[in-house]
Length: 536
Image (cartoon, rainbow, N blue to C red; front, side, top):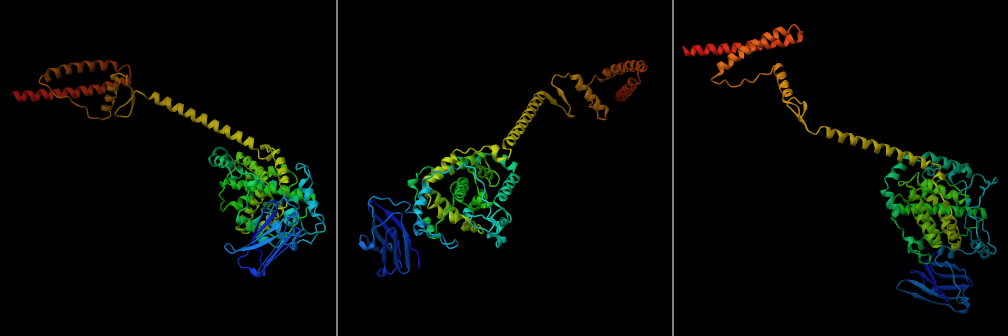
């Protein structure tokens, strides 16, 4: 038998069930209504629905049915037994498919006696989410330690050692208690925290700012405006038909685990700007301690601290303001009620189905969460959201020394800024000192106001080093000038000879001058000889 796709709508007087059965044998179609149970059969389709209120029995023939060939669907209108009664959660298809008392094939069959009253008691009662609880003692009768949805499973990874590393971070979870798993988780988070990565996102805030400023679509709708998509309705039809019976301790752990899952979903939704990517499954599984460490929480503050710390330790974008904003997103999701939370869980379920071997996380947690949430009333989720609003997570709660780390980084930046400012001032001063300097041939720098004597001294030194002196052109009256030069040179030579007794250094200089004068005299003598020869 095939379970057909269907949808249910209502008005004050009736309930309309639309059953899509394109390959049905129309002539064999049967409809039976008995109190709150609706049954449809038309080979090869079979559908049984259980409503929260009662309908007029089919024997009274108060219902009508027809087949719409254009869409291939049966449209059946059933009259309500109590006119004006509202049937809640008609879009929770898995819940409609689950008969009262069904608990699943892997759990012993238990009849839920007074199920409606028990459900009302859970839905209406207030629960203290901040109440300090103790982790449940392990069942000494059952081998191994428990984990999974409501801590119902054990021994799962005994035969799945190859898949273990790709699914969870904890090793050998079947031989570790909940307290041991938590202790190892916290130690791992503290050791895995990367200070450099955190500071990089602390100062380079472009990506984080984009994520923080993103406004998700669930801020612009109300709980009444949440509608399940067709694909989501089809996913509900594939869920198992069972009902979960939770004791108070397990119920608290399930609600706190739900907060952990929603935070992970909200983080991924915000950093991907609402467009999921190939890393979405990793983001959700890594940030959620419930999924990555099989942890079971006992206090709401512990959930919030774990979520924020893991969001600053493992994903790509690690920013304090982003983590705080995701916490607000989680509150908003809870305030939107059952349908929105179910949508988030179904999306997580889809992530893991497409990411091996994370499909095991669906079997451990997500599938049961999708079934269980359909029975949870909105006021319970609103109460949880109100309690989460009162939780304040400070940087000191994370035990990562964030305030000291940020202060040290800011101090280093201030010192670097001061050093750079000093270097810039030195460069400006050097530039001012060099203003007005003149560069000459030998590369020496002299002030623009230095006198000409210093330049002449440098040129004289160059000549002493073997440079060829420049001889000025000889004029017609060079003879008289040469004679006067000879006389002056002889006087200078006598004077230099007298002063040679004062210092040996002056003697060397004067000897050089005598040689120069002698050379000059010889040059003049040659000029005179040449002149006499020409006259002759």
